[in-house]
Length: 334
Image (cartoon, rainbow, N blue to C red; front, side, top):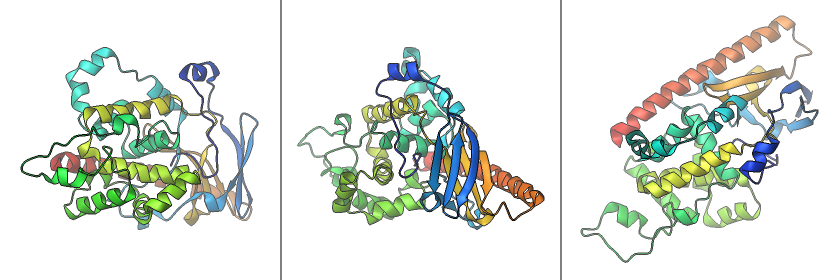
């Protein structure tokens, strides 16, 4: 979830238009607690924004988290990371190389080869592509060809996917059925580091509710659900589908909006609002303000800031470890 709730992202229609209007991301000039329920921000482009604290992501004490699980914050991408992605142009030589072909065999490796970073980068970039409509689970290239062919003997893959119209389970009924089948067979390696609230939303949404999300244009929820659908189908995707998803992700990154508002995370244990981005190395802090800063000393404020910065550094280290472990499990099981 890269885009904050209630924030409209202004997307630029074409890449050439984007190149002509491209400008640096606005920097945070000032951030304060407006009252108990809002965080106010002024940016370098002279714009002012008010965040509803209840709608922001609230983080519990990290020490209570399982250190074997990914710590996921829904934050935007840094300017440096976006510029890095824009500079990664795959040449014709790259597309014919053995390395390129090897990295196009799985969805994860294809996207990771192109964007770098760890699993949080992968999640954020795919989510953004889904949120902006660049990536669609029911795109023509994702549709399965009509065929009366049946394998003999009947395979498990055929039994589980024979009623699918696309290479991903479009309906919630089929998607949840596939999730339960993979869970039973211990085949959920592609979802092992996806945030649990994504899974909960997916499992609690039936087809009627999914259509209601579409009608109400609840883009963020739809993107989370469609991400799960894509990850459930990774072992059924062909090279064409993998290339399509990867190219849509890269295109959405090249058009990443400069109008994107900074992401703010509420750290309840510190009474703090933290403006944060995701760069090449992980989460990066841009600004920290405290709800009770008028009633605490400068010394305590600085101590809290040091603790928060150390916490985020630790989270980045843990995420790298989880990422490496997940990668090893992925290829060991695959």
